[in-house]
Image (cartoon, rainbow, N blue to C red; front, side, top):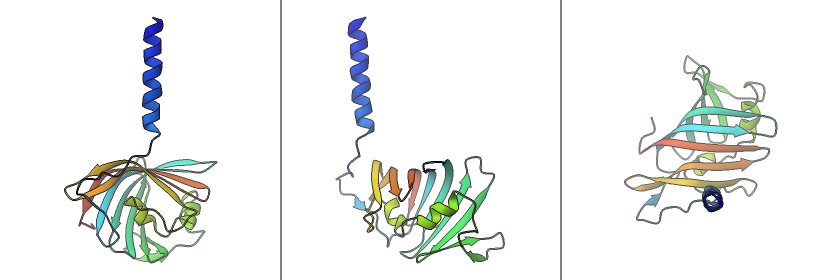
Length: 177
């Protein structure tokens, strides 16, 4: 009985240590995904601050180095928003397809505060690259592989008072929509 509990506690310790270790990018002949490649990622993200946590589903389309289209919805898919990033500005796409420049009072909290402090190179972070801003930390927890590219499957990003845990379940590389 003592032996069994010792084995279980040792196994639990080893597994928890594996969960906390950042994964290395696969070293095979896989290329890193760069800003010049169009891609689309689908998944979920947990947005957290000291006071709040919110889970969102997303479809992130990276169109070019300067432009992204992000569809966000709540976990049930009842409320959604489409954001367009053009250079360093964000726009909301309304139901008629018109773009409205976002201001601090346009969106509900916590999304408004997160968006106002979001790193300008967030699309680079989605590919597993490091931020140019030293106040932003990112870590790829696990990698997935496609035919040519190593892509993040789970990553964590911390900036300001916010943290994102991004879980990507589908990558379409070379496809922006």
